[in-house]
Amino acid sequence: MPTLNLIQHHPAEGPGAIAKWAASRGVTLNVFRADLGQLPPVGAAPAILLGGPYESNAGPAWLEAERQWLAGSLAQGAAMFAMCLGAQLLALSLGGNVRRMSRMETGWTPVTFVDGQTLSVLEWHEDAIDLPPNAQLLGSSDQCKQQMYCVGPTRVGLQFHPEWNAESVAMLNEHFAEESPLPRGQPDSAAYAAVFDWLQATLDEWWTAQATA
Image 1 (cartoon, rainbow, N blue to C red):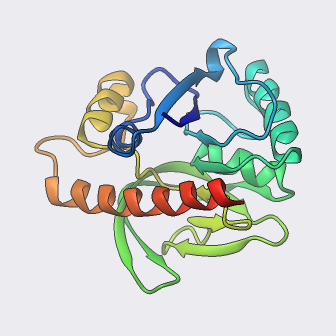
Image 2: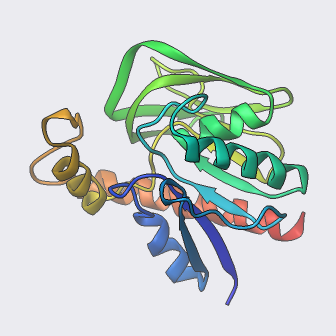
């Protein structure tokens, strides 16, 4: 079975719906907890980078170790699929910038993609990305223009969280309690299903691109 490295940054932010995609595609996820000092070797192996409640250009010492790992792996041609904090780390490594927004963007948020499709996705961030050189903007929201970008077909960054399913949100709400701005109560199953369909198609495209790069 093919394997795929996944970098997790926080105990309450796991693979979520990505695990379901991987299982359905016969892909084994190798999960590394960067916050516990776990990283794969520097190299050309593809990886998925998750989010987390840290500043991408500051934060704890282990995050600096990840930034160095990421720079080294990108230099060797590694494909990356990155969300929220991960997308910010990817942008910084490719020469972009990350800045504080005037207000936080949270909860279900419509994102419009360059193909004209609009999808409601979950957000929880207060930083925004200024795109790196040669990046293509792929999706925007009213509050945050840089919702999705790519640098070539194998390096993709998302400011939102398509990996968060109902179980993910319940875990985040439990962990962060009143600090969490995420939905509570009966999950919107149709909204989660639409996001999962989009995530599957987007990951399939990225996975195929990295295999043929």
